[in-house]
Length: 77
Image (cartoon, rainbow, N blue to C red; front, top):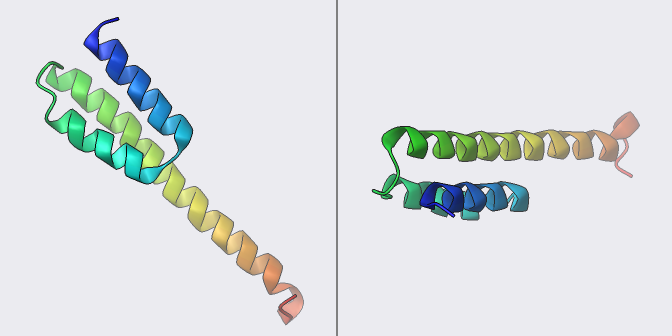
């Protein structure tokens, strides 16, 4: 398994776990990884950035949906 394969597996795992802290740590580690080319690093970091964005968007949408359910008809149930 090449280093790139290991990095891709780590990125896949971080995205599957959907834990922001884990993705941010990996983003920082990738910034300092000299064994990857600039393009390889960028590609993997973009995958993580997109996952962080989706996570934040989904969380916001779920919070809004929950607020709507709780205040349905103007009554908090």
